[in-house]
Image (cartoon, rainbow over all chains, first blue to last red):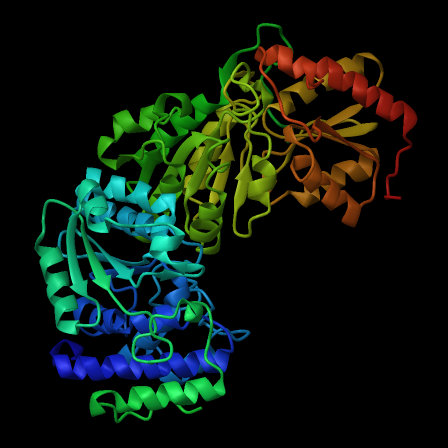
Length: 288
Length: 331
């Protein structure tokens, strides 16, 4: 059972997922590199520890629900889902290809296990809030939680703050947001394009419980999720500080990798880099 | 079997009621019939008549505030959680403002959210062009998976509301603000995707949707007095279109006129033009709004200003008939 993976094993899993991401993107020839790599530890923590899910029963009635709002980072979610057993790892190589279940941006109806369709930014928090509202007030089910991952650039969208107000008003305590705070968006840094700070104060003023963590420390991610579940009088958001492109030195911190895939040579260098990380990686992954 | 029209239809004192009132009753009934039905509103419960549901089922009503993007996306999430959400606002705001959210999180995501757009058409009146939604039919009928319905009166609106509650699909319901004469009866049929021949005739087919069907019936009566034989087909479901009924009628009459309180381009008239153009090329005149916005005025005054009343349409149709040959088998 995956819940028994140690932190070290989870860290190794995160690196396998990063390798998957590099191979998928290189094979696809298009897509976003920085976000999925930066969120790999979050996706690992979610799919291998935090989420109460069953890959054999994607629509299990007692499951936790995970909405991906920043749909362009879906390669990381696909990789985590495949490694978790939702579908064969080999299928990752169909990303963005004609006829694939792995669409360039996630489409719920294509792939069991996806909870929503996203890509156009700003709508995932509302969908998660609608689900959480249903659990809390209409069905009165308290043992399920609704998680939603958002990008930080995505917080430019007004729809996000409409949802934040709604969740705050209704004290949606089963709703847990995770912001991938990597400080970049397509045209540059978030603070240049449209400043988000003071981000903690913004969420707090909307009635949310806020935690700030190192988004690459898997133990911190798991602990923060536990804390968020324990908050029973308001929605929670975890601002996860991450490094865009994390794990591949020539991609890290460089916003130019936001919407670009590696070419064959870059993918090779990236995989070498990932394999040498802390001497941890032994996995050979899916073949290219 | 002929369609059971309201026997008082052609009287000056024909019963009138806002179409949205039928929606209010239908939603409450749908809520009684199915506990999964929930309702969300963007600060307009009275105007959209969602108030009836809200009073009956406060625990299944969700107030969203003036946030139409959140309105439909919260509904999408509730649908994922197994509910049948009805969202209501003015059509100018929903689907006017939140079309992308509807496209991505409801249509592409294929969630059975019901988008109810009230106050559509120029008969909204003094509020003016900003609030007279004319583009909603075009916006919604172009979306894959979306069902589009414009009921003709309040009785039919009630039936349509009940029907979309159970159709399992993303659906758009177009409502009008002002009192509209009731032409149907409680016994009249309504099924999603069906058009109904209200009057039979041989010189022209008048195709109406929403509030305009009543005007077409009035036009038909006037034309008949002038010796013109008119068929009136009521088309409450704009998507999917009842091609069979429409084509059978137009094949018989050889001429068609469509009428809507909306932009004819890409609207209901657009849908009819597409159908006839491909399957039965026939002379067609589209009555509606043509590449312009509405403006402030009294509702009846505006209908007259834009030549959307029965007597005016009768004149338009007469001129069309006098100058256009019939093509029973198409061009």
